[in-house]
Length: 217
Ligand SMILES: Nc1ncnc2c1ncn2[C@@H]1O[C@H](COP(=O)(O)OP(=O)(O)OP(=O)(O)O)[C@@H](O)[C@H]1O
Ligand SMILES: [Mg+2]
Image (cartoon, rainbow, N blue to C red; front, top):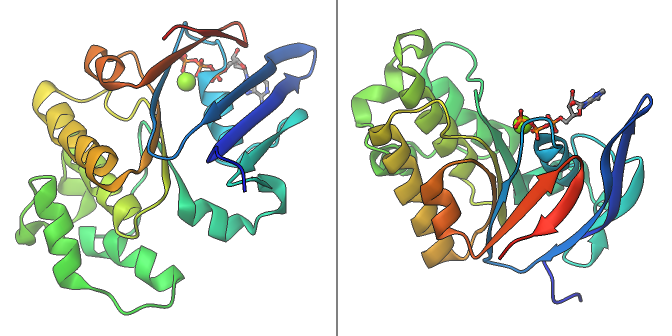
């Protein structure tokens, strides 16, 4: 078993004539908090989608707990390595529809009390369960999406600018939940962000420019 939880090995991504990621390699330990930053168009989101196994690299490999992610069962992998992006989409009618979904796909009974506790951690009280999605603010939607992703705790959280469209208060609510998960439960976090706070919290900052990596501790 590898000492690294994630091993990114010479990953490239080519689309048409353009080399979007150029042979990136780095390793991530369990419980590490990594920030990925860099100029627009540099390839940050592409890298995150590749690690999430949503996009396949054109070259290179990713290992999760020592195993090539392409050999993992995709559904099981997505439950362990959760991907969460900027305008997370909520579906159906109410908050309840969304937070009950993770139970449905696992064939488990809906745990309303647990959902309420998780919603409370992002400052949404019980009354939100039956609110229609269309009535929620952007920040509330993002908080519900985070709860939906965290009801069954993943080992790794991949975050692509999840707070960039939010105001200071909403950012703080989301950050304090992420701090707790990382510090108390050793959930690994890889976050693409330009936010100073997230950069300061990171154990390591990776900068991607034109598809290449500069390691700037
Ligand atoms: N499947 C694809 N086909 C063609 N071009 C692509 C594809 N995926 C990404 N690109 C291009 O690759 C480049 C990197 O995109 P990416 O979204 O990874 O950048 P980014 O670093 O996340 O930028 P931003 O900070 O603006 O979000 C962009 O020029 C984008 O248009
Ligand atoms: Mg991006």
